[in-house]
Length: 119
Image (cartoon, rainbow, N blue to C red):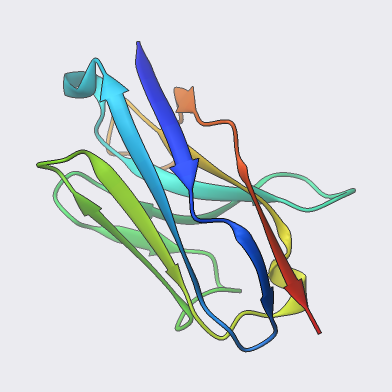
């Protein structure tokens, strides 16, 4: 099994920045792609950004140019740097990990961390 623990959420004003972290533990050898998803009230969960073990990335159009995903394979942590935050970025952000580098199939999930952007 793989355990994922997110941190770094909080409240920020529009235009501000936050960095989310997700630490993976357990059967790390099973982890290939890692990613961040978010779910706003009344909306479906959506992929925000993903990264393969080799560093290839994928972003939702709504966050391109504002968010950056990165990972440290030595300490098994994935980060999401969020800049120029907008009220519509408000959501619970979930870390996910997949056993392949497909960036579309997710096998493990964290508990989520709340991000609130006030106008």
